Image (cartoon, rainbow, N blue to C red; front, side, top):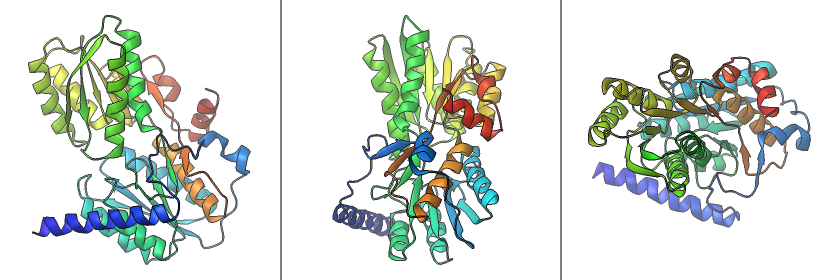
Length: 349
């Protein structure tokens, strides 16, 4: 009964949110296909230099979890801008990526603490909707930042999630001319990013006519679950030629399974996010590649967008952030902690 009541509350809030969004002439957001969008690289050219925030400006951030390097890196990007501009910034998260109610409680607790803006990275598309409504009622703007998508979000910053999977599928098409059997290790069911990454991969690779996606199973962003799922798939399909995992933690679990099966030389493994362990695994020859969405840079861009919104700039609903397929061929180019140099490299692409 308790679970039913919680579900009912979330669904009710979701319906309320959609109603409000429609009243504001905002269709439920699909961050990948939203027409009202711009690329991060156009911000300065179209809107000028970042306006100086008012003295005493406080910004809060709520992330999925701090146990995953991606979300710690995103927070570092937020903090970089806050430090540069002398802002007060608070960054909090749930204990793990499955603690939806814990994340909601964290978000709601921040609303009464005097923040000028809030940056939300929800665990699912629905779990922070009640907090978004409370923030709106309090007059606090909320910026939805990678990677789950709040349907009523007025502004979103993040990469094209479908592109992650498309990039990996294209690598297989370009580098495995004979085709073959491949598998997907999905993230958490019901999460927008996981669905879009999987769809981008499967649609693109199926369209080539040379590959068969023989398995596509969720591992809930867990390295251990990914190891177990990949081990089973390798037993079922001994002629498998590759995996695509929806994040790097799961991809590294797949790498362990591939090694244990003695197939490291014949099975390609790709992840998503570009965390440091993925870069190290690529350099070591264990992981074939990852799609880096540059979380520190994304955090910087998101904080800049939040401050532009506070300054009254009329930005598009979506500001798209960069991504790049990383393999042994270009790993050294992007393996840098110098964000200024990274910005320059991406702008030069």
